[in-house]
Amino acid sequence: MANKKRLLTGLQPSGQLHIGNYFGALKPFLNLYAEYESFLMVVDYHALTSLKDPKALRQNIIDVVKDYLALGVDPSKAIFFKQSDVQEHTELAWILECQVSVPFLMQAHSYKDKVAKGLEANAGLFNYPMLMAADILLYDTDVVPVGQDQKQHIEYAREAAAKFNLAYGDTFKEPKESIQSGVAIVPGTDGEKMSKSYKNTIPLFGSSEEISKAVMSIVTDSSGERPEHVYAIHKLFRSEAELDVLYESNKGNYKALKGVLIEDIEKMIAPMREKRAAITDDEVKRVLVDGAEKARAIASAKMAEVREKIGVSLW
Image 1 (tube, rainbow, N blue to C red):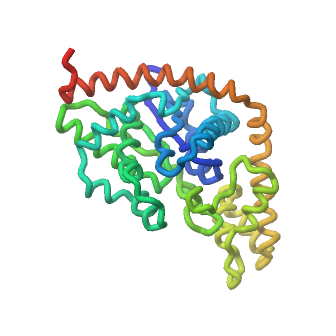
Image 2: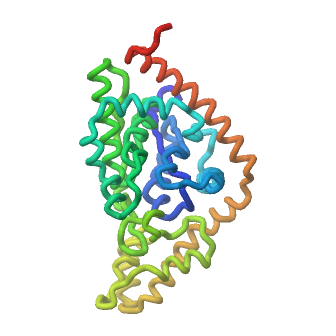
Image 3: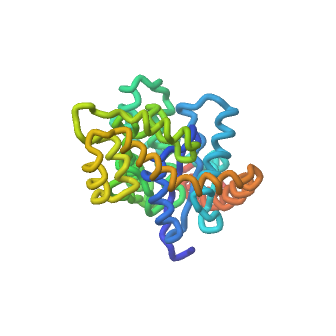
């Protein structure tokens, strides 16, 4: 893998994955990761900004790894690890926080959006972009597959790298984002961005009943001939040419159109759901232990360089 560029991605173990996670982050990763030296990180410390239940967090960590494996990720082709198993992430985050200003962090779209939605503005939520920057910069990452709404976080990582390099000399690569055209922002059942925080998701590994319930809850405009929110989600599963014919022939029949969307989602999810059910907790733990060892070797070497540059290394 020495000649390959590096790719890093991660998802929070903050609850059940949804199709927004799949199309916005996982699918782009699945299409890319074998071409790179890839790092797949469970960002459990990021989850602490919103999840305060230790038992739930432990289960979510297991669950999210099962999800990735069920989707087809091969742990022999990626370094698959847990953020909290590599302490250098939080160490570097503090160092990067000392390079940027409070007004700079106040411009983060995700922070402003969550505050506007009434979520608690804790310090972790505020400093989130610098921990994400540390996640990325530790591994000399070249590419980060993200949704359009996450693009600013990569810009923050580039800015943090540039500020550090200016202050202490060339140390960090400035990463680039990879955004899959057309599905970077996945709409939820209310037409807003699909997010667990907004409770507008369609579960990725949900049962047939759960998927059906979520789809039937999609908000529709009774004044129109085509349910735009249904159509926006349906575009993830069929071409617009197919959908235009389908929606034209079912004008105003929202129930029928939602029924077809349920069938299309179920067709994609059912085989993955079956594969996931066969993955054991012990298998997950083996994958994470192996991945953490590899990630720590790389991260510790990088932090040795950083400590030397900032002047805290005395021997």
